[in-house]
Image (cartoon, rainbow, N blue to C red; front, side):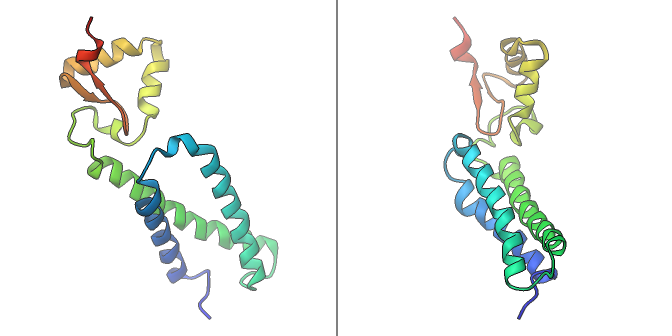
Length: 149
């Protein structure tokens, strides 16, 4: 029987994370289901600990939690590495201009919005720098023609 705590298991967990992103999360708008995804991942954590205890891979809860944390760390590393590489270099909106770091997350546009509560001025500044069409988030664009009166 193959151990669930060795390098092959870690590579497998990372590969499952990449496959989950490419096969599922790359399609559709998952922002709308973020709570469901969060609860599913919490259930995955609990199920991994229970499975490690059940198959005898760990003799106590502490060992099961440690092994599960390592396996799930590899899983999440594969998932988020795939996600960031896709958003940064392969996303269908990648050809549109805009700040490079805004390709990876909407956190940056939210920060700019909260910084001085004048997002319209921030976006107008981006348009002055990048042109009429600007990518301002991982899946969002601003078109200057729509902002003109």
